[in-house]
Amino acid sequence: RSWRGGGKPQVTENEPDVNLEEMVSLWPEGLDGCISNFAFRRESKPGIPAEWTWIDHNLNFFEAGSAIQHKLWFTIGIHPHDAANWDAAAEENVRRLARHPKCVGIGECGLDFFKHDPSEAELQLRTFRAQAKLAVELRKALVIHARLTTAENEAMFLKELKE
Image (cartoon, rainbow, N blue to C red; front, side, top):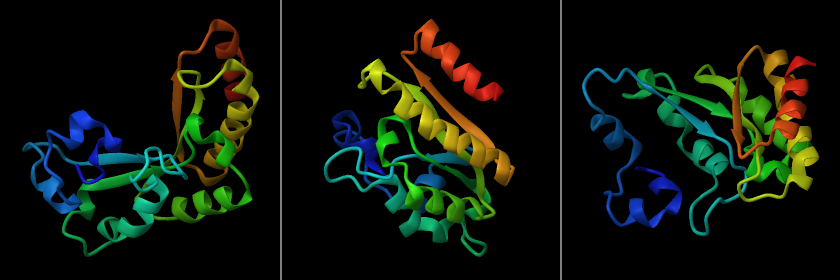
């Protein structure tokens, strides 16, 4: 894995560190391609580059002329764990990368209370709302993330989708 599984020891200790071209060469026959979600503006683990930094440094693999570009697509957005980092600069970066022909969606965005208190629902919903509007405006798919939601906050989430 070129991104080392987010720094998880079960990955870093058991899988070789390969670059993206090597990883694609290891895919099983018949696997036509991969869509990668780039949803963290900040580092998700110490020492592991932020996903937004990674895509900026490796966008050349998604460009015409790359030996593997025909197998790669991506989405760009802000994960609920990173919702506090949504601001005007984040929106501009999402817009910039969404213009790339290999960008097929906005997100992964939504609600996640695995590491967060339900009191953070409005922050996550605000970030989700902004990305949902962008997806509609830019005519991109919206990649949804929902984990450990309750019936109450699921209803809030579904209300946002309807609006």
